[in-house]
Image 1 (cartoon, one colour):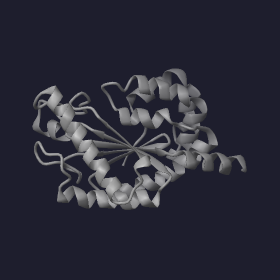
Image 2 (tube, rainbow, N blue to C red):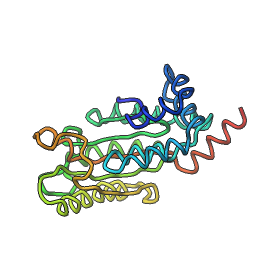
Image 3 (cartoon, rainbow, N blue to C red):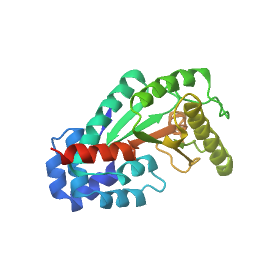
Image 4 (tube, helix red, strand yellow):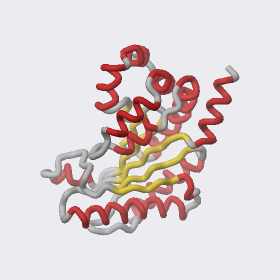
Amino acid sequence: MKRGLNTIAAVFMSASLLVGCEATKNANNKQKGAVIGATSGAVLGGVIGNNTKGGNTALGAIIGGVVGGAAGGYIGSRMDKQAKQIEQEIPGAEVERVGEGINVTFDESSGVYFDSEKYSVNAKSQETLKKLIGIFKEYPDTNVLVEGHTDDTGSESYNLTLSKNRAQAVTSYLVNNGLSSGRFDTKWYGESQPKYDNTTEDGRAKNRRVELAIVANEKMKQEAEQATSEE
């Protein structure tokens, strides 16, 4: 499982939040969530959110919603468990714990993918999504951002529509199999946010992806605040 903040967060924190960085140097994710939130909170979320245009907006969604402090540590502990379960049950998924949330990336090598120029959820992808549904049911106090991305093959407008259809197909499958539609936000970016080199076959395959940002909902935030205020 990939762990830690992305480059934007790391640079910002090293420049402006030296105390927070030192405190999290050897911390686990629960501890990092508490320190990051306590020292930066909305400021860090705003900086990352403003710098994720053309970048990882799933990460921006996660950091932008930090609670921070002891409550953030409580949420981080819950997210550690969920991330570990996703990693164990869906081995091909790229699972990254960030602050108080989880970023999951599915591409053609990780069990959720689409046939060429198609957007229906195929049988192999359904098997993986069913595992994810089971995990989401076990952790009901989370919200999920679903993002669709493509490589740069074809026109920009075509790819934007394709990414929209694919992201919506994933969300629809999850909702149609027992998850509340209120937990989901669906966005699409076409070819505008490549993570890998589109000049190579492998890079294009990895850019044809669906990303998930998993964050605490209001119920979990309130539970965390209450639990930590009583300590």
